[in-house]
Image 1 (cartoon, rainbow, N blue to C red):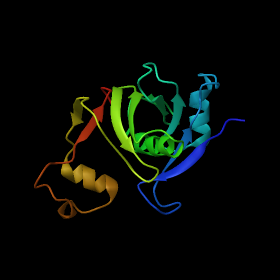
Image 2 (cartoon, one colour):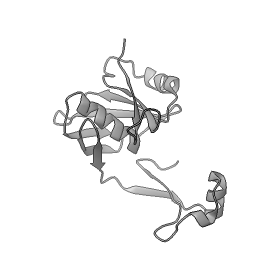
Image 3 (cartoon, rainbow, N blue to C red):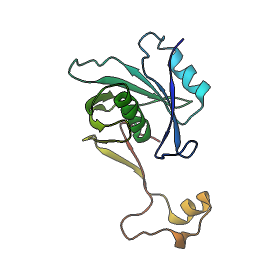
Image 4 (spheres, rainbow, N blue to C red):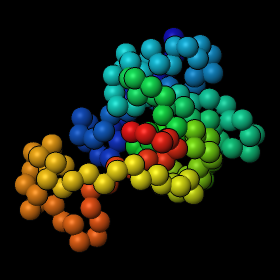
Length: 158
């Protein structure tokens, strides 16, 4: 049986954060099953931890939504780094993701990372359309620093 974890990222309370499934040792799973497993969990993301391609790195992380593999996503990177810290890695790690290696610092309670991958701005949606879609008034959004933006790391479309 394959071991897995379910984490609530961005909270200290059960059922209060962003759920994430983590397969901490996916090395013996058939790659063709990764997508099926992610679909079965049906969380926004499921991560699969594999041995790193570069021996000096900590692990290779593959991230899947129920529909497709993603080169990068923030909350699964944070949650997986914390899981790896709880398994004895770190606190300083290098995780291999679809956008390249990410330097990460993680403890059993928190994690942080930085990346040099370029941010690809895909769109700057209209404020009225955006607020209507999420059910709030346009006056509830502060636009002093920047407008709503659709952006990504590592892929060219949403």
